Amino acid sequence: MIFRSHLLSMIVYAFLVSVVLSLIRRDDPKSRLKYGLSLFLIMVVSALAFGWFMYLFAR
Image 1: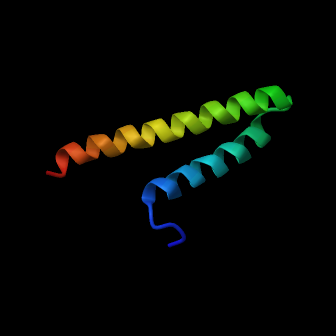
Image 2: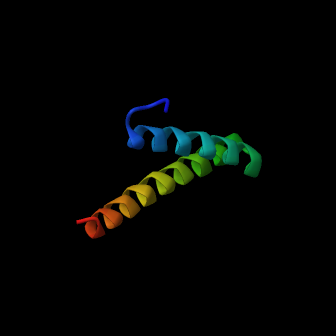
């Protein structure tokens, strides 16, 4: 395991995936940045929300 924190691993993974997908899916540099940033935020926020939701049932 590279990182000791699952949160940090998830953030790095979301960053790398959003960079690759924005380079593949968009042509204009401005739209690449906007798409990559929105994809990164959607991935991180949804993963945190899902983790919080799972925590409710782990008790």
